Length: 121
View 1: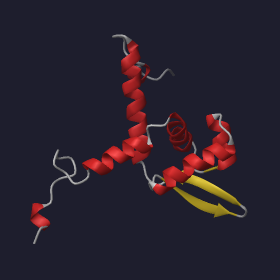
View 2: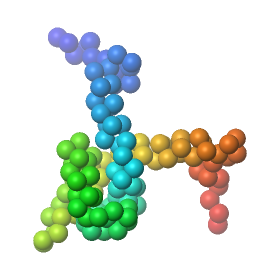
View 3: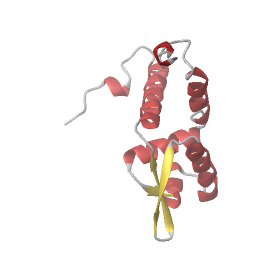
């Protein structure tokens, strides 16, 4: 039985490394990152609402959503004649949030980036 020979997903020799690279590939587009951020902020949105939030046309957003659906990062729910999109789980949002934080570090020039500042009350 191979059950005891399975490698942890976080091990360098994991069978999931290539799939993880594909996840990064899907998220390598700025519009898709904006879509994930919009869905992170609002649990369910229509294509038109997402398009408005990310500043793109509904048809362009639909194409990006199709890619995210194929990657199982977003799911849909029918509401009458509308289709509402939501994140399938918290992982895509977490990846995007960490990438944005890393980007903040890259441009902070040694100063503490915004995500390190305590929230103002």
